[in-house]
Length: 160
Image (tube, rainbow, N blue to C red; front, side, top):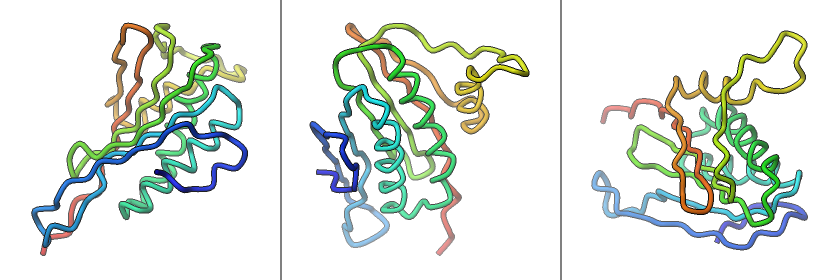
């Protein structure tokens, strides 16, 4: 169970998976963590804290700022869908070179990257996600919703 301070935002569920790290004496490497959040404005900050805590735990401090922007944009978009269920925020390590941030919601409305005008007060979120991930983001439609994912490259491992 994720135990970070999420203040007054109620968490419904959190889970983690682990696998043995072949480079060490079977020290577990946390490879996944999920958090269900309500559709409340405070959930955006809770999602940022959740992802940042996992990245710190995985010693990927250099990715925290970019990951915070990404998860903020994706959860804000999810919050704006008006769903009444819970949104899923996940962070994964599918490989040692990738961190994947996921936000799932109960809406099948696809996110659209737009060209926000110079004076626009919104509309730049997906363009920032696109820039920070070098275009490595996408959407998986589900029968009753979707999951938007964004991949960040991790720093190269230090040779031993």
